[in-house]
Length: 132
Image 1 (spheres, rainbow, N blue to C red):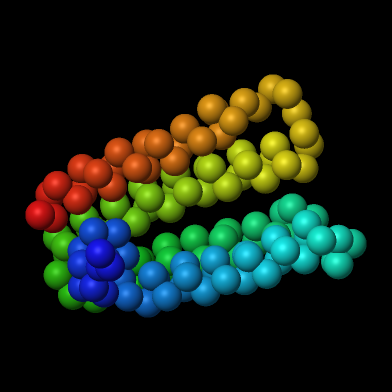
Image 2 (cartoon, rainbow, N blue to C red):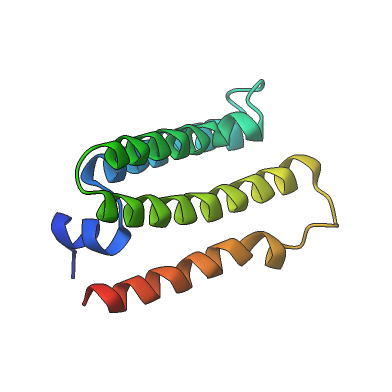
């Protein structure tokens, strides 16, 4: 079963434009990841591959701040709190994963790296129950 756009906006807590930005970043990330893994771009580091996600997180935060200035304040504050929580957990996961891929350290376990993802999944589960 596929979700409609209205259901995705309610469930994820992002605006339609933010969802479009994240999908576009996923497309660019996939291309950069394929180039890096095949060795077709030798100067491409892991930080350069993940830069699309970092940029979209910043743009999404900016869009949320712009929404905060317009419209109803209470809904804007709730939206801003939700987006900042989700984006900060996503950012921590991306930074830890990128650090693990670059440095190949034994100090970072994959359980530590994926812990923000599990927290994010639990938050989305709670939000899904609140929406329905």
